[in-house]
Figure 1 (cartoon, rainbow, N blue to C red):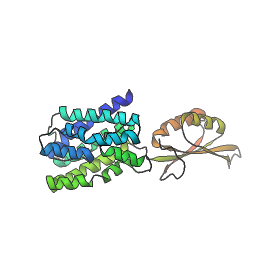
Figure 2 (cartoon, rainbow, N blue to C red):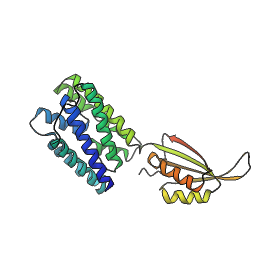
Figure 3 (tube, one colour):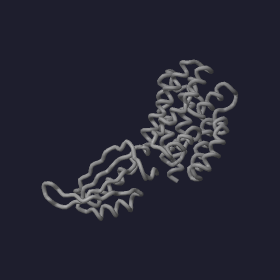
Amino acid sequence: MRNIITIIFGSVLIGFAYNFLLIPHKILSGGLSGIAMMLGIITPLNTGLLYFVLNLPLLIIGYFKLGKRFIGYTILSVIVLSTSLYIIPVYELSNDPILASLFGGVIAGVGVGIIFRASGSSGGFDIIGMLLTKKRDFPLGSVISGMNAIVIIISGFVFSWDAALLTLVSIYATGKAIDLIHTNNLKLTVMIVTSKGDDMKDKLFSKLYRGITIMNGQGAYTGEERKILITVITRYQLSEVKNTIREVDPHAFVNITETKQVIGSFNRG
């Protein structure tokens, strides 16, 4: 239920960003939503209806490649976003197109990011981005932004190159906001030095689906035996790991470093 509420909120947030900040200035977002916005501006058709129709093929592909739960959440997001674009009136909240593109992009990125964190997507190129990041450690927002060059070029020819540049600003801001919210591609290496190695190992195994390497160590000053546990986690799991360590051994020495790349067996979930 929490995921459903989160996805609904994120989808409405995106609809607000589009209709209040981007569309009034003919600024597009990236991917299929940008194409739907462009068609909605130059034709009598509603952007929400166009967005829903354009997403149908990708939803079918995603059903077979990404699982029923993910696509179920994505269908919910597409329906809510399409409805929001249909119901929320197009209103020029800011008369400054630069501010509109920047804040519209950030707000839309926050909406997309929290939908990703709830194990769904807002549809469109997001599905393609999820397919790519499922196999590789690409930053999700950067992947999606990289697929949006065609939208920017079309915007320049259809509207103006000023609009195209503002679209670029919007897409960039969206990508950065997504990367700040959706940090599953960021990995951390945790090294724990503790006198309660077995208890720490068992507790971590009960909380995490992660491999743990254990080495024997000795304090140089005290000469006391210690266990050194090393594991790689995602940024999402850091809070839970820290709480577990404090629970088992409040006096443990812990070193946490950002990991650039993981090679070998690693569960990306």
